[in-house]
Length: 264
Image 1 (tube, rainbow, N blue to C red):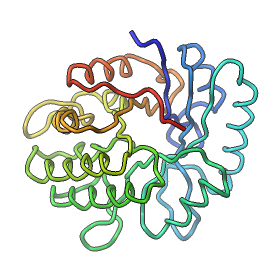
Image 2: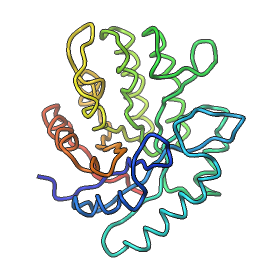
Image 3: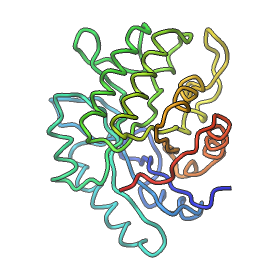
């Protein structure tokens, strides 16, 4: 049984696909016995320059950060609250990521690659990959993001494997690229419990969860890579649930000892 419970991957209603306000998640974290709670709702982009959807509007960013600050002060004697954002790495927004960490005083960024730069140099949607050839471009964008040093951890690094294809050399090569770069840059890889909540699915090579994928994490187990468990909760009730317990059990069976803190 864990003696310390932390979660640094938390969403709220601002992202348009989660339920509950920020304080609802704080109360859930307290009832679950967490020591630290990190908010990491999906960061906005300026419109009309970019509109990737399913995230807060840019005009909400200030209020989001101020709300987290207010809750941090209100509950300072009960829990440590951290102020983060989840966002994709897309090279043209490098300066924006720097501004989030400096001008906006965000404590950490999670690299969640829902969109990537594809073979044509355009935006590809990670949920709509039509060939495993694209996995390499997903991994390339992800590794470029890690090399900037702007991202504390990679959220669901094996997200690409949710697409309906059997494991092949592209899957392996993408995994190796991501894991090797995480090692060399010291970037933390997140073992994402939300994949378990999505349920088992039938793939061409068998039934499994869309992610985390054991084959990816068996490779990670062979490398000196730092791994942390993230709830990726989109409802307060998922702050610490059976999926979180399963995540820690699975990592133990894979021979991975996760870290419990982002070190911020």
